[in-house]
Image (tube, rainbow, N blue to C red):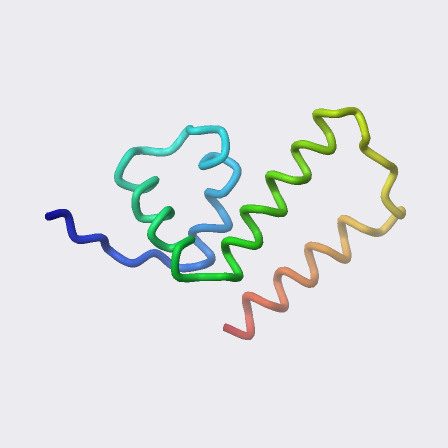
Length: 83
């Protein structure tokens, strides 16, 4: 039986795009899949990223407010620093 080694939320967030693109090593993929089963927040991040890709892929993308990227980056940094 393969025992999984835990993975941090931050590591999952850094790799979620590669995970979706099926561009991670099988061991990392298995660790992330186990993490998604127990971490509702990271599962929501995964689902959100997939939804975003569907929107962009369907040409239903829309313009975001000018400072959106900056504010999003700040919010993520603040969240990570509180963990």
